[in-house]
Structures are given as structure tokens and as C-alpha cells.
Amino acid sequence: MDDATHTEPGAILERVFGFSEFRGRQAEIVDTIVGGDDAFVLMPTGGGKSLCYQIPALARTGVGVVVSPLIALMNDQVSALATLGVRAEALHSGLDSARRTEIESAMLAGTIDLVYIAPERLMSQRMLALIADAPIALFAIDEAHCVSQWGHDFRPEYRRLAELADRFPAAPRIALTATADPTTRDEIVERLRLANAPLYIHSFDRPNITYRVNERGNARAQLLSFIRDEHLGEAGIVYCLSRRKAEETADWLAGRGVDALAYHAGLSAEVRRTNQQRFLREDGVVICATIAFGMGIDKPDVRFVAHLDLPASIEAYYQETGRAGRDGYPADAWMVYGLNDVVQRRRMIEQGEAVEARKQIERHKLDAMLAYCEQVSCRRIALLAYFGETRDQPCGNCDTCLSPLATVDATREARMMLSAVYRTGQRYGFGLVIDHLRGAVGDDPRQANFKKESTFGIGTHLSTRRWRAVARYLIAHGYLYADPERSGGLRLAGESRAVLRGERRVELALDRGQQKSGNRKADKPPIELEDEPLWEALRTRRRELADRDDVPAYVVCSDATLAHIARQRPTDIGELVEVPGIGDHKASRYGRAILDVVAGQR
Image (cartoon, rainbow, N blue to C red; front, side, top):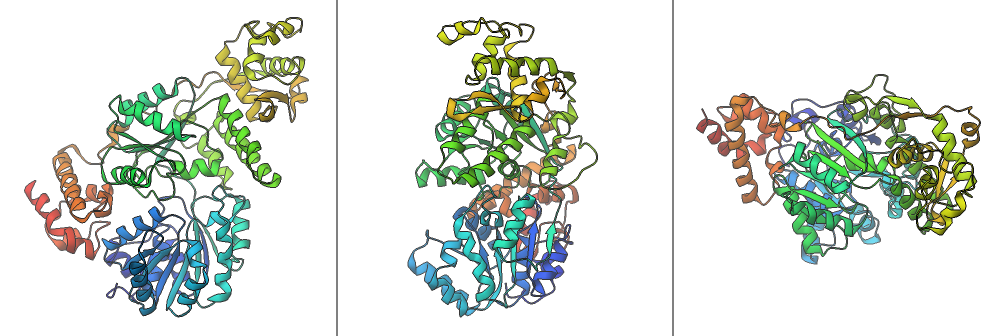
């Protein structure tokens, strides 16, 4: 962008991006990179990571090279930058040779500001030779956790990016990620050779997100009730473990009045593209997806992320839930899980092709995820602690804070279950063990042999559901192990002997129930009642402008920006550019249309 290049970062922030001041430590990070030094940035989704390299790329001479793992993410960033007047391009396999040649020529000439590129293409000999002849402002390594074998999105091709330090020593490097525990951070630093770079860690807290975990009953009915009661007509993502489940859930929701679509890697490229575009550009679309619907999602007004299956790790859970509420307004992270999830996830680990060291990492991560689900105190405290961040006070915005769960001493019941597992041979699943405790004998011939054991029928005082809660607790806290090699057969583990001897107390929540956080629609739109007609008129006009420019509506203006306009009611371009999120280019391109809507509502 000619008129912004080589200017002071604060001026770029205001003139190009439409914000009057940096957030958090953004200013420090930007100054570090503009000054030519490296940096490692950990910042939550929606915290403003992109500005940390986009502004230095505009302030320094040459083109900023951004390493990005997904074409969808590249294209989304390029579209957003184009509406700001920034010259950005993406080099990927979806382009024809003529278009690639055009972009490469622009890089050599220094006539573009940023280019997004996958690590495989960047580290090819041809591209490295081209970059050596081009003026390079910086290298930004986005989703840097992909370099770590401890991370949940390990990408071996990221490992070669360390070579950039030797090949281009004059170009500063900035590595960025939204999710990395201390072990993963250490490996990122080592693998990318950033030992001398300052580490900028922002809080991992997303205070606008309400975290909620429920025991699975009828999962689809629970999901439908959640959407209808709190998020009908709002955008959301529902994560499922399998492709089939994603499709069936989308069809089931659609048949009940929810505008739901499926997304997974098994669908054709055209269907995936169409469904993703509808989600990004239309209001109120719900995507039912596998993790294939991931890092390329930059939609700020996703009001909920739901999980119908247990995520593999807290990192995956945190990153996926982080796609909700990027605009800062209230959003929900909602999940149901059950004992079958434990068995299924463990089976996936054991039957995977990873080496044993990697499997051990995955087991530890799953154990941490289970412990989070069984949390009876503040979830946010536990979530932040996983990433090495200490919080002293309960958050007041998770299910265990909003609807505190009373606990009861369940040490006796825990000892009963552990004894039953031991006396039935440590080879049967929780279903048979619970039937044994409750004195039930079904058609399974193995059950007839259980009658002579002293633990048969000693647990009739608890329901099957309650015994399942006891089993979940014991598994989550490492006293029982659901062996995937034995179809989920339970085995004693860890400090189970201490529980059996009565040396370890077990506190169990009375009932998790189906807690609700309150109707979020009371919080939307984020405006006063008298401004609602203008708010709706602005949303309609935004939709028309987005369709004209073939971009998602949030690229024109975010909900937060529209809310400011509805409150402030600017009368001219000078007042409009004072609105956060309206820079010079957006004011020039969309300003008159926006002001006409405001004038029409006076």
C-alpha cells in the first residue's frame, strides 16, 4: 500500500485498519519486528495476531512472506486485506501457472505488501531462489505449533522453516500461535531456532466465552434444545468425530428447522467450497464438521462451538472453541461426552500408526482432557492452568461457576466399583461391571459367573447413570483404565489401591444435569432498543455490499463496527473514520453507502 509503506506503525494501524490504539502487547511486538528482530508470539484466537506481522510488513521495505498451512486461511486473509487497500496475494496449488507467474513477478518487483504461502512451496528450491532475489520485509510463521510433535496439528514440513534463519539472516522472523502448552512452546523455540527471540505471551483467557460440559444423554436432542433455546438463527460450529456423524447431524438439524450444513474431507471440493462460503457469507448457518473444518475459519460472529464427541486434547478443544466469539461478544463453548468417548479415543490412539513416544504424548493429552470434563470447580482456572497461566478467582462464566455443583463423598462407591472390576477379572467394560454392581443378569452368559462374587448386587442404591458418573471419575483421575485392546475392558490403574484402602477420598458431583447459561439472545444485538431499526438496516446494507464485492459480510464491517455506527450515528466521512474498524480505504469504498443508511434512519 503505497501511502502507508514506511510510515509509523501507529499511523498504519489507524489509517489502514481503523483502530486508534494497539491492544495488549501488540505495540511491543510490532516495534520488535519493525526494528529487525525476531519474536515468538502466543496470543488467543481473536486477540489480533495478524496485525503483529501485517503492520510491520507495511512499515518495512519489501514483501512480508507469511507461512500459512491452509489455502482457505490464505484466501480469507487476502480478501480481508484487499478491502483495506493492502496489496496481498496467496501462492497455492489452486492458481494456474500464469497467475502464479504474475504474483512471483510482483514479489521480485516489490509491488505487493504480503504474500501467503504454504511451507512446502516456500521451502522448494525454486521458491527459495526467487525469494533470494526479492526484497523481503519479514517472515511470519503462522500456526507455529504445527512444528511441534507435542502439538495437536503436527506438520513435519514445518521443521524445515528453521533454514530461513541461515538463508535470510537480515529478514526478521515472527512465529505465532494461539495454542501451545509449555512443552510445545519449548519445542517451537528449539525447532525454529528462536532461542534469542523475545517471547510475548498474552493471556489465554477468552472471558466472553462460556464453557459448558454436559453428560451425554440423547446428544442430538440436547444439541437441538441448546440451539433453539439460545442460538436459533445464529452462526455456530458443531464438531463431530466422524464424517458420517457430521452429515447425519446436519441432516437431522436441517429437518428440524436449523440451517445446517455438513463439512468434511470426504465431500467433493465443490461441496466443501459451497458449504464453507455459505457459512462465511450468510447469517445463521450452522456447520456440522470434523476437524477438517479448522484453521481457515476467520468468521468473527460465530456465537457457539459445540462438541458432540470428546476432543483429543485440551489444545484441540481450546483452538476449536476459540472460533466462537472472535468479535468479543458473548459466545458458548458447549460439549457433551460420555464413557464411550474414552474407549473410542483410546482405541484411536492405540490403533494409530504413530511411534510409541507419540502415542504416550497422546495418552497424556487425552487424560488431561478427561480431567477437564470431570472438573467440579471453575473450568477456566483448569483450562488456563494447562497452558501455564495462573488464575486465582473463579471466572463466573462457566457452568461450574454459574450453576455450582454440590459434591458428595463417594469414596465408598468408588471402592465398590474398583473391587467389582478386580473381582470380575479386570477384563469387562463398564456396562457389565455396572450390571454386576446392580445385581442385573442379562443374556450375556458371562454374567452368570458373577453371582458368586461378593460384589454382586452391592450397588443397587445407585442408578446406572450414577454408576457411570463414578466410572467416569475413576477413569478421569487415573484410578481405572479403559483398555482399548480389550474393547474398553476396565483395569485397575494408578493409585487405585489407595482408594481401595480408604486412604484416598473421592468427591463426586451430585448431578451435572443440563445447565444453561441463560438466553444469549438477550445480549444481541449489542445496542440499545431504539437503535435496533438502524442496526438491522445497516446489516442489510452490509449484506448487499458484501454480495457486490463477493466477500463475506464481516470483511465489509464486523458486528462490533456496526454497533459503534448505530450508537454514534456519524454524519460525514470525518466522523465515520473515527469508528473502530473503519480505516481510510473502507471509508472511501463503503462510507457513502453507510452514511446514507444512517441518514435514512434519522
